[in-house]
Image 1 (cartoon, rainbow, N blue to C red):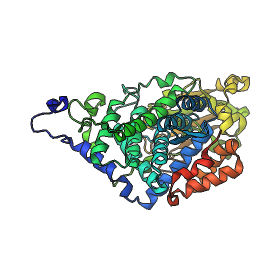
Image 2 (spheres, rainbow, N blue to C red):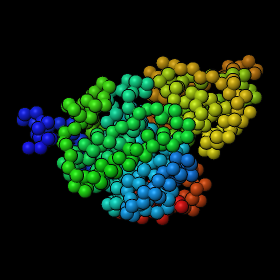
Image 3 (cartoon, one colour):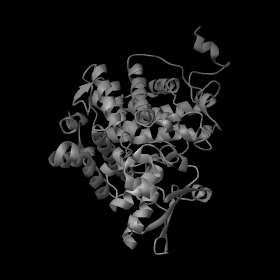
Image 4 (cartoon, rainbow, N blue to C red):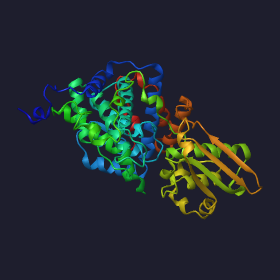
Length: 466
């Protein structure tokens, strides 16, 4: 009689947890389940956005860190580590690409799931799709699944606020989303999918002190690398015949009993197959932290409407949601520092990738002088407002005027989505400095047409950077 059997209550079967059974069954049916047209299109755009984030991120510190480790780990030639320019073992490739995906704060986000889905799920899915020689359609279906399971895994925890979370929701959502996508692409049936979920639970971890990371390397691991690697490892372990405890999401002990703040079992499965969480994910216009997006939209609107420059500003106040401001308030990383980015935008008349990531400008006397006139105020009303992540910029000018702009629906969010053309333009801007115009155009076209690709490994020549 096994230990696992002895731990079961009398009459309890190996899959008595209804939530685990439902999720595992849903994973097992992924590759044969067609996507609604609008969901498939959204998946294509998030794939392109994340690929562009990986390509650009290979040139930054977190991307370099991931590439170096992938080179050291090596392994069988299963999946491409983009920054390394060659195939390595699938876990190493997923880790390296995920570190690059969150290296530059341009990757997507999901408010309800409290995580950045693309930076963990896309690298894991690409790695398993390469291992298995899967089609572009398979890849898209697995990505949508990953967003569904990743978001729901966090929603079920009942986290009241970012300040109350004991564990990093960014890690947890990534781990579950990546595991689900990898398990689907590995072709698992219901039982093996359940085993993969068990290994996802056992690998669940992450403490939200990433806010203190000034180098954006541990943060990239927490948001992307950890989830991608653990998701791929869960799938590979099951592929190698590892068995696992079944029925692990609810009950005691279980995923929810260990990690939830206010557990909501129904959130694990609510709307599966009818509510696609990728439709609730946001693609960033600006390559900076998510809470800053609305503030930049508001400031640029004032610049455009009033020809506003730094010389006109007597004082500027950014009114921000009180549950998000602390994430970006006077941070020491340029791309997640609200006051710094507002100052740079005023001085330059706009904000690009290079200026958002230029650390030297954190010490620029002009920037520092302007920051003395920039203030941030938390607002509970904006936290409660819908759609979420709103911001208001109020400017007192040297001429005595008061200017104000309230951004309610940030470009790229579900309430104001970016078009295919806008996402493609963003992707080109990110990738062109790294791989040149011809390869950039070819890669954008190939990803936009991914649904007709019979084998995603054919993308390798376009994706390999080194």
